[in-house]
Length: 241
Image 1: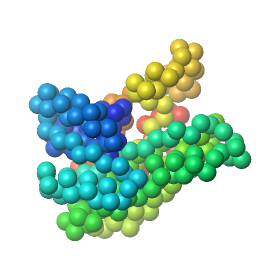
Image 2 (image 1 turned 120 degrees about the vertical axis):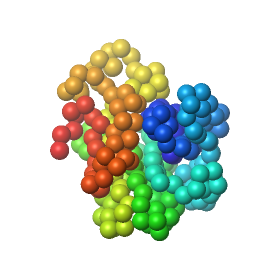
Image 3 (image 1 turned 90 degrees about the horizontal axis):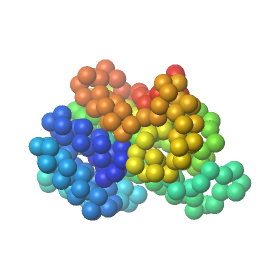
């Protein structure tokens, strides 16, 4: 999976390995990748690490080659890499660099992963893809505009591709988390901001990486065999559609 070296991605790698999957942990930071692989192996799971920059088409092609060299063609693609460093700001104050960074890191990277990993799935007539969207794409908030726009693009692309490949036996779905308590997020929140975030979710708490991992497990598995083009809102009731 892409974005597998930290946070939600790392927890999802661990969850898939715990359920018997052979996992490829991918990200940019080799040391972080190695740590996740070591955790999985220490728990008896099967995992390898392959570094990749998913904003580069050639790097994603090399990632696929690495996956196939280790395990053969991928049965499941978790396109989770993303994020944004752009601060919340009115559009007129946003820089071109901030906008391009959010689009490249979220939308372009997802496009590259689908473009590279879908063809072997289509050839075999089976496969499951889960993309990473965000609750920011599901309602208007005060968050970064570029990030929300990029994630909305991921959702539209996910649905379009799901329809295009549905007859082939390949399913394409998305998860859309709201506030998730990764180490990075919790480290940036004061107790007051955390309490405010918890109150904003009807269930009374923010999410955990395991919440997202469990949703991805469901969408990737045969338990969701009749679902494609679906966005699963892992949002504690903030999104109800």
